[in-house]
Length: 435
Image (cartoon, rainbow, N blue to C red):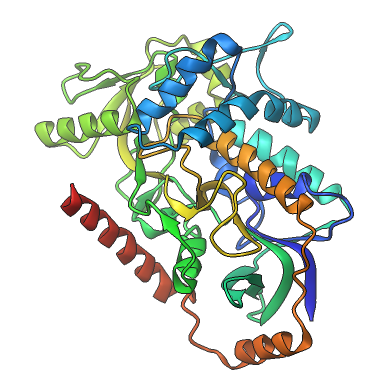
């Protein structure tokens, strides 16, 4: 029997930070579908929000609520904001380097923020944070990481999670029993033709939880990012960070005229772009960085500058074509403020979860913070739980036999990708009908 204290499914910031906040005496196993570096956490460009001081609390709270169309869970928003300074301190302790003005943090602004409150590392903030957390996780003796290993089912007995069924790179399918299981599988971008997400992020946690009756929440709340680099080919889209617009970039129509306020919430800007594309009869609009000096572009946005240059666009001299694409998932597996699901000994963190912070539409640069805050709370709750969750021999034998004989797992990719896509579409249609 394969057994661990804590099984974490996913290697983004949520899964890694949860592991790093668990006690050293617990054996932790992290499994991930691909290599660890191929998580959306590595792709995050703009930054991570932080409450600068008490005077900004009310404005930060209101900005988050307004962006979420006031469908946010107020308790979760409060927890995230109040916990932000401690989380940033933790990250700095792990070696994360944020841009500074002298000894003080430098802050940038993005859409729907009333003031600059976003910390950043060039335009690769996600990579800076996630790589440092991953390095720390790899150095700890109690943490084991298995790449190219997918969860294909959960082991649930009487609404209590005992672990998961996994499939490794060799195609072997077997059970891993665990006292606690944490779903950190990311979003749903792989279900969409055009997305900024990695293609292997296909809503694994949702599909499995739906199969077992674990409560989900707002699975039709899918965020479209207004500005990704336009390409005529299919595949993952390169994100042009909202912080570019926060620093002064403007959106232009086919005739070179500005047509909207670029710092409105993402859903509002996306709608404005779509309407302008329809009006102009074009497959994209244009983003001009002419208001940002060349030195600042190369210093603050080196990756964007490099990627656009490779596609034939010099952002210091010309506008670039941009188009909306699926970006983030505000819904997910329903969790409480400690990241507990409605199933015993089962938790969910990061984009796979829904704790209500984002409401109907995520405020820019709240995603990394939300993932980290509630992953840490998850770890603390697991650490304080002394209940036993070791299955007896009869239960182990039962599930070993089921796994050995079962060949029709829902999450064998092709079947469940189409299944989850259909479920999200149906949820969206139900929401429209209710409204």
